[in-house]
Image (cartoon, rainbow, N blue to C red; front, side, top):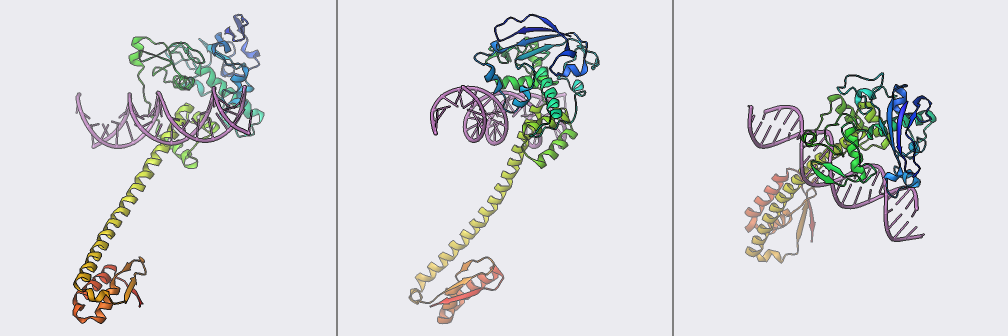
Length: 351
DNA sequence: AGAACTCTTTCCTTTACTTCA
DNA sequence: CGTGAAGTAAAGGAAAGAGTT
């Protein structure tokens, strides 16, 4: 039984009423765990979201459309459930909030949600979705006042006007355990110090599992993300961020490999360039010292069969055969070339 | 049909936190 | 014990794509 305070957006005043959860047509996380707890349910309807009507709300989330359409009243519902039986009492506050991981352990497992959802799976998704929604909207650390509303939001002492998705990220952060970190809320100065962003390290098991998932597909669709998050007891946002960072790391590594490869290519080409320059200089020197030979029509192209490099042994050969005077120089050059390549050269003589 | 708008997702950059040498 | 480097979780913004009006 919940005390529901409804600030309905339909401009029709809704009375504060007690909801008998067990008889509620909607499925909720609380319903699974608690039957007779007295709660406080605050419904913030469309009036809280300026200009957004029923249709606008329907399009809010493409991915959750089918889930939410079968869900309860889509208006914002703030559940302030102070007590519940059958949940962990380890929390110092004695409050049982669904964003706490130990409470989520009782959620139905096995989120399987393919494109064609059967009614069983659909219902499971509804339960999880509502649980998340409910949890998301009821951070114990903050009066989540900004979601779908234009309430002032304070962060690190500054008044900010948070966008919806940012607020959603924040409520996501606040949802499960990071409740002291950083919130779209009005918080006191003491809390501000403690509200610095805390980074929690994933466990080895979680990292390994995520790694395995990444090997299968490096991007996740929303359903996979939800299932993975549930399986690892992480927030979907955490899974999302992990995959983002993982993709970035992969890309960075690939870039490094590419960079290394290009560096080697560059070195090889530089060497080749030097060699060609040297050969060109030799040929020019030859030309200036022996202009007579340049009038000879004969040229020889020599191609290395393995590297397909055209070398200039041709002229050398020609010179060698035609002018005994230059034999010494040219033969040395040719032998160097052959030694450099260390394999057989095919000579093509053109006349 | 297409422009305008909204929403979601991904990528990229930066920040902040943790771990380790 | 302090410090810097490396690794990484997370924030925030831009851009793209898809759906809606």
